[in-house]
Image 1 (cartoon, helix red, strand yellow):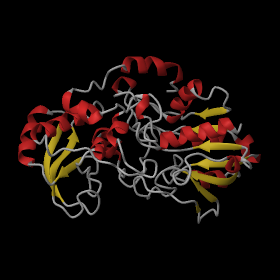
Image 2: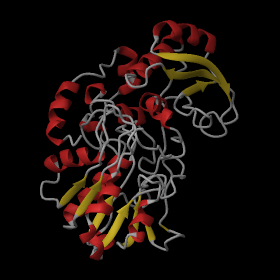
Image 3: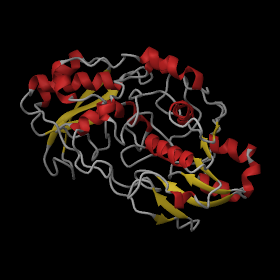
Image 4: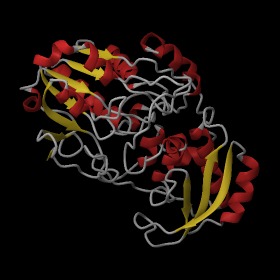
Amino acid sequence: MAQTVQFGIDQFLQHYTAYKNKRIALLCNAASVTAEGLHSRLALQNAGFNLIKLFSPEHGFDTTGADGAFIHHNMDKETRLPIISLYGDKLAPSAEDLADVDVVLIDLPDIGARFYTYLWTMTHVLESCCEHQTPVMVLDRPNPFSHGLHLAEGPFLDASCSSFIGRWNIPITHQCTFAELALYFKNIHYPTIDMTCVTMDIWDRNINTGYNFHPTSPAIQRRETIYTYPGACLFEGLNIDEGRDTMHPFAQFGAPWIDVHVLYEAAKHELPEAQISIVTYTPNHGQYTQQECYGLKITPIQIENFQPIDYFLRLIQLIIRFWPNAVKERNYLTNANPSGSQHLDKLLGIPHAFDYIREHNVDTKKDIDTWIESMRPYLLY
């Protein structure tokens, strides 16, 4: 029988009892649970820790907020603790937020993609804690996408494309945990921060089993979604629907102008790494509200080795080949980018991304060997 992975929160509860007399703030959401499935805030309170406030990222504490939607401050009904939103009128805790806090615990899930914003919320918390000299502890969790650093995919982030869906120069699928990235960022950006990383027990990045996956946001309800998400999310920057309204978001896609049988026949021969099926559906919101969309559903054949960014870039190039005048860039409006401009550049991490994709093949493995060497000193598993 497979052993159960012990998360950072489990290790903290067991080995950091000296912190029971500290005033604690917790950055978390509904997917922040112990190995037994109890929410971290309740586990801390049940164990006698003095939890005084909660911070929440995009999608809110309950993980149900719409993509990019402004999240208001709130009150946790169960514990009566204040929930301070870090995806509303601010992205980082203020001096006032930290004034009565002895330590901030970061206990956020991730799905392993650079443009999934929980990573950057963590960095804003680290930055604020460093500035205001507040100790911070990163309670580590699995990267459910990880199957070895050699499978990381770029492009790396050009500085001109920095945004809240990619602040710094890392690959799109980095293959690391938050604690590992926090150590890396500390060395580069926050050398004076008082930071402790609480590691997991039993987790093996190459096997990556032994724990339950909990939904992390409205579109990421199942672990299978994360294997296509890093590539299919590029559709957000194009006039192609990414399937949010379907049972298979970021695995199926479509548009009213796609001749699906033409695309199916070409993709079947040119993109053999996945099973492909034809889909027809009508979105309830978004750019094609109540319009019938025609597209494909993508199911990776070997999820452990699937390279979603390379795959979906080639798929996008295939669509451009057949419908060069129909494919257009899309502004994608979010709280962090109200104009929605240059969304594809920000996602892919390269300037003039749409023109580049039309004219060049994107090398998603460029400099990955350098990334592996750069991260080697900070790997914890």
